[in-house]
Image (tube, rainbow, N blue to C red; front, top):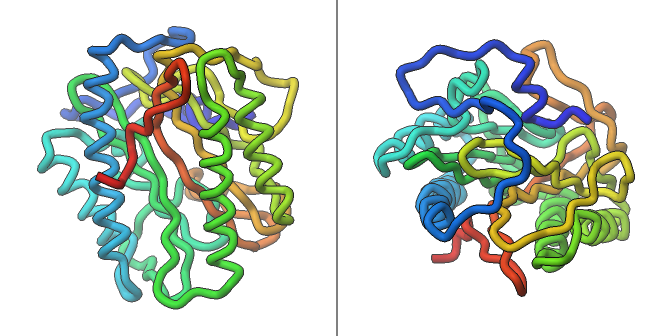
Length: 279
């Protein structure tokens, strides 16, 4: 599995004056205290705010660099540090991936957003020692039915997975609900990248997979776990490849990809969505 955290751990650490939050060691699965969850709510609210604002401002003609500058400015104005910038060499505060770009797209002044594009914006904020992490797919302007559908299916898959989360259920319960939603609509689940635990580190155990597998631990969920659930859905094949920049991942067949993600905390009877944008 090419999990984002594992990929990043293979990169050299970037030296920065910021509190760049690296994975120091494998701490296992952490159960967060009520104090820790309160802190995560603050960082997650910043992420939700920035993504909501980006979704409202994005228009054709903007560059992905424009969005990155805006996100970093807003995260810092709210007292936090961008989780992604400098994280094992990643150069930006957001990942911006357009159309057939799957994940980890690097913002660029020359990458201009067009009418009809499907733009995935993933970002994180680090405040008081804890992270929030979330991704949205934005349908820019008047889009094709294909663009709208894959975004909707990816979002529906996320919420189908979230509905299966409560203490006593397992990661396979989440994965099965996501996979069934995706495949029933004729799409494929990207298997190279998974969701993850989140907290003091941006990427923690466990891997929150989006497909049925016996290759990853089927963890039983406990109240206090904080997870980033993030199905990635391809229009065609599930297979991806990484470009020469060593970050940007695209679909091998050139077809569309969509992603939605929330940071949540597991409760005894369900979840609380920490990166909920409806506030």
